[in-house]
Length: 160
Image 1: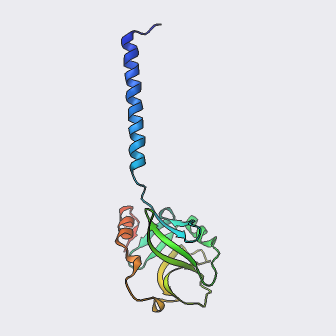
Image 2: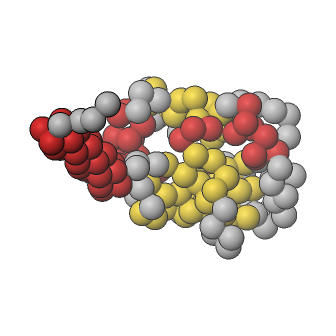
Image 3: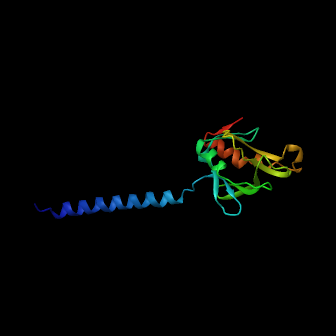
């Protein structure tokens, strides 16, 4: 069976059209930034907690309810009594710094702290100061970032 010249040109035109559409989809999908929240270890840049590990974020208490996987990631951290520094990023941009802190530490901290609990509690608080907010340094609270709150609102994980 031989194809006519018209059929060959029509087939070639369809192939070129599909190739062009595929190229456009690849180009535009690579241009769309992937929004992402993450808490990274400062020294190694290792992602510890991402928005995928967070079930919900409470805007007023700054408590995160974590998935089982998120709890496992915190449990896997080895945190000395002086803490392990982290950085909170949104879309690759640094928003604020803090430290993972062990609840057995007798050393106070005036910065942002995430206590690493070993009892598998799914709720983790990002707090100012350790052992309480009485030890927090004065000034603006970086946890109230409108970008972060807007992001959690956008992905449907923000609670009051």
